[in-house]
Structures are given as C-alpha cells and as structure tokens.
Length: 614
Ligand code: BES
Ligand code: ZN
Image (cartoon, rainbow, N blue to C red; front, side):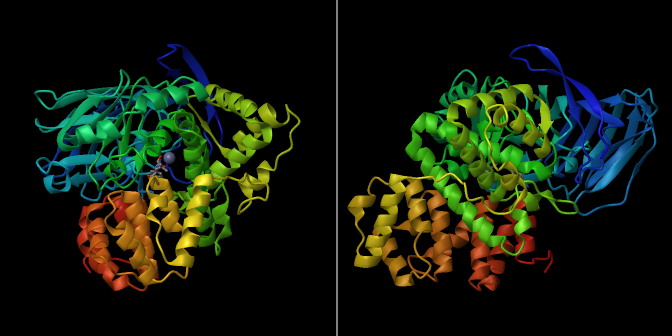
C-alpha cells in the first residue's frame, strides 16, 4: 500500500481558523491519479455552456502540490483535450488506453517546479455526467435545462480532474450561459439572473471532486431563512418553498446534534423529473427530484438526509467507494435523528422500519453473492455503482443504531460529535474508523461490541436493534382484517401518513389475488395516488400480482415516461421483467430512454439487455 502524508490547508470559514490537516492517500481502484506524486489543490474553472451543440467548452487551471513529480495524472472520460499548459507554457500530454468504466488517464508532462497546470477541453456527446434537457422535459416547458451528476466517478466526464474522493480542492468558476438562464453550482450562488449570462462562483471550503456540480436553467430563488432557500422553475417555486419550509429547523436540529454547519448556506434546487436520484448532497446546494414534492411534506426526510451529508460525506468523506457505508450509513443514522428531533420518534421509527424491510429484500436479492452484503466492499474491477445498494445505507444504519443502543445515546452523541470535529475536511476509511471507534468509545468505556462482524461479515448479526412502531403494528392489523373479512375499513385509514400507506402496500401477502387488489383500488384509488412513493410501491405490487384494473398499466407507462429517478424506474422495470413482461418493458423503454439521465439508462440498459440502435 502506498501511503504518504500530505498537508492541505483548509479554511473552515465559520470559525475562520486555518488548520493543517494530515490525510493519507490509500490506493484505490477507481482513479488513475497518483496524488502522492502530484495532487491538485485548487481549481480555476472557466467554461462556456453551449446548448446548441450540447457541449461544455473551456479550461481548467489547477494549482498543484508537487512532490518533485515529472508527470501529473488526471482522470478523464469522453473528453476532448485540446491543449495543456504547465505554468502558462504549452506542454506535452498523452491519453492512455480507454477503460469502459474508468475512462482514460491523462498524463501531463511537468517539471518538479511546476505549480499550475491548465487543460483546455470540450465535453462530447458521450459525456455521462451531463443531461441536456429540451424545454418539453422541464416543468415550465419554455427553456432548456442542463444539470450534472458527479457521484461516483462521473465528474471526470465533464472536467478533467483527479477524480478520487480522497482529493480535496477549493474552486473558483466562471460559467457563461445563454442570457435567459441562470447557472448555479456547489458553491456560493447567485440569487437572481445576471444581464450578460456570465456567473462567477467561489467554493472556499475544500471538497471532493464528486461534489463538483452545475445546473443551468430558467430558475428562480426563494429564501426560507437567512441561510436556507430553494431554487426551482417558476411554476414549481411556491410549491417547493412550502414543501421544504422546515429547512432551517432541520439545520438547527442537526447542529444541536453534531456541531456547526460549516458550509454557510444550505439551499436545494428542485430539478426536472429526469434527475436520476432522490437527492444529491452537492455542498451548499443539494440537487433534488421533483418526485418528493408531494404537497404535504411527507417525503422531506430526503432533506434531512442530504443535509446530514454536510457532516457525513462532505466533511468526513469516504476514502474510497469500498467505504461507501461511511458516507451513507452515517447519513441515514443522522437523517433519522434529525427526523426524530423535528417530528418525534414515531415518524423516525416508521422510516427506520421501512429501511429495515428494504435491507431484508436487498439481502435476499444477494443470496447468491453474500459478499455484497458486507459493509466494507471489495470493488476491484467493478463499477462503484455495484456497491451503491441498500446495504451501505440500511445495514450501515442498523449497525450504528445497534451501537447507539449498546453504549447509550449520550455517549454515542458525544463520540459522533467529536468524530466529525476531529476529522473535518479529511477522508475516512473503514479500518481507520474501527480503530477510532475502539480507542474513543469502546475500549475507553470497557464495552465489547462485535464491530468486526457487522463490518466484515455478510448479513445482519444477531444483536441487531429491534425497531418497533405502534402505527405499523396497526397497519399490519388492518391487512389481516382485510384478508379475513374482505372488507376495507376506510375509517381506520383516514389519517394514515405516506409511510403507513407504503407499509400497507409493501406488506400485502405474496399470495394476494388481482381481485383483492381491485377491491383496495376501488376503496383507495391507489392507482391514481399523487404521492410518487405510494404510487411506485402500488405499481410494483400490481405488476407482481398480475393486477390490471383501473387503468394501472397505462399509469405505469406514463410514470416511466415522465420520471427518471433510478430507484423508481429500476424497481418497476425489474418487476416487469420478473413478471415475464420483458417485451412490454422494452417497448416502454424505447420511448422512455431518451428522457433518462445516463446514470439511469446505463442501469436499465443492463437490466433489459438493451442495445442502442436495436
Ligand atoms: N449521495 C446519494 C446519491 C448517490 C448515491 C449518487 C450513489 C450517486 C451514487 C444521496 O445522498 C442519496 O442517498 N440519495 C437517495 C435519497 C435518500 C433519502 C436515501 C436517493 O437518491 O434515493
Ligand atoms: Zn445519501
């Protein structure tokens, strides 16, 4: 293992204290960069967003920490490199052989004195981070839209960069866009449009390359509090503002738990429906799907989740994608704690039980490859996407919740608060965490805990925390009653929340018959639910149990044609495939595919064995 200490100066802005943090670069399978020889430290990005040609053109100038290297290696994928300069003078460069997953190493000749490297480049039509939307694919339908998605290894497809989560850079950017559009980034952002379409950005806290982000569209800003607010297209802005009106309260609750929010501003941009994720924690500006705008704030745990990443992920970052649970497991734990603080243990426990069931299903799905149910993964030669499953999220959560119950909340909270403080702006790998946990929590308090089993073994250990919810017990009771009496008691369901409905639908038994589903649909019109989550689990059930009433099939088709959130889309296509309806799935996919971000279409291409041009 190559390891070397590097020192990066970080200005944490709120405490204005310049600290020197030591971090270690471990070898990782998803980047060609060799940061121990020469590492990027700051980026000046100067780009033009060309909606006509659907490309980004510009230059990236890096300040580097040079350990007497004569070559600096960047990651790049599907980029056209026009020219490279070292300290302002043109220099030689070469692109190595192309790897389908990783792209190409870009090797630039430097001298041991070189301090700056400038890369002139263009993106191409293959660029996977970008989605260019025509006006029809947006909410307002009047202007085009562009957004990026960097995690896990896609930033290299829109900026040549050392694309490892261990790298941290500050950046400034100048972005030129068409005059009627606004540009926003994971940085200090404009609150209104400029007259010339030129926007300048500054990100003064060092971030990992996967957190570089840009969105361009006809958007507006509306503040929720002094430091929180929302961006959306005009027709969505008020709805979004209402849905996320607890943002400030969430930041306050999070700060009370695990220390100050160090990124100054916390905004959310709601993107067009093709955004491939629920949310993405781009620093200072979370990117979110419009599918959470339910009208009743019932899906806002997503805000708590992305906010939590401001500590777990953005401040203390997984060192490699094999340590992904360090980002997501901690974030789900933190998310539940924020939800509990704001809305009570009942709501948090319902969310936790849904996560518990998702975990069970994921483990069942991995029964042929149990190694994929370990928290610490082995992803050599595999796409990081393969490791981005419920295991990292929900097993990670269950581990931390079990640990909390073992040591007591008070000690656990103090431990976590220190963990974030002591590792702020640095990376964490699993082994380092285990050591830190032993030294600072377990050994100190003479507590024994099966940490190794949780992290390095498949499945769920026997000492798992038992999560209980009276509300869900009642939902399960209702299912039993319905099955026994064949009657639907609408009085009992009248005050059900989204989570109760999701639990109800998900827990209908495996032998449920189409006519029973029809009865439920008559009573509750689930096929026409306006809640995307309830609709999605209902569609999944309908497909699995051969229900075709109430126009559900055409609803599924239009859902798949309008929403690009990978989790939803993948769940439904998988269900169709499992039900032997692959031909129908392919038929829908042929038209829907053009609306999906490459993150989603890559997944569905593989699932349905779809080849372009066929
Ligand atoms: N960071 C993830 C999204 C992600 C994961 C992007 C892996 C690329 C690769 C984000 O924080 C997330 O977990 N989003 C969830 C929502 C959340 C409430 C569980 C999602 O998109 O569904
Ligand atoms: Zn997350």
